[in-house]
Length: 114
Length: 110
Image (cartoon, rainbow over all chains, first blue to last red; front, side, top):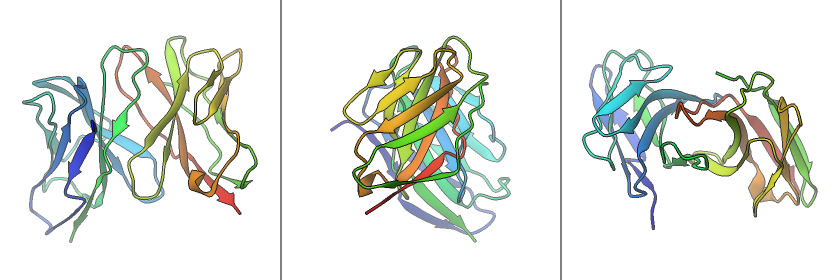
């Protein structure tokens, strides 16, 4: 079945360490997105990419980095510069330039930094 | 970007219709209105979207006002499994970016 896979589901790190969250999709979607969700909050956009080797900052990109070397993969690195990294991270994908393309989401990675 | 306003929470009795409102008074002419829902600790799930006509699918109906400043998502026969956070969000087809607000927590009671 097609879908988006995020791994791992839970991740624990010590403060000061960089950590990379995986996101893979087999939907043949062009666009991929990373969102952050804090308790009781809506989703906030971190980065998005509409094509391989190109990506754009979202609303809260500071302290994060991404790469898009393959169409199906869009890993997110949470760097030590991110002041409050503990959160629920969601990856999504969609077709680009399609009037009827909703976002498809993975089931998230819950990151805890202590 | 268009801003949306939704009530923070709503209750509904099982079997009854749930009507979730969304105000998007600054929406522009080429922005669709999308609805998603999120069950605890899972990724959001797409429900329905529309531009200016009312839409219906197997999950829900979407009513958009003629001036497009607001819309209502209707779950015709709510079940306990419909308890979730519901997000209304505008989507610019030329921009490719979707943003979410805080949504409405819908609680369906037995």
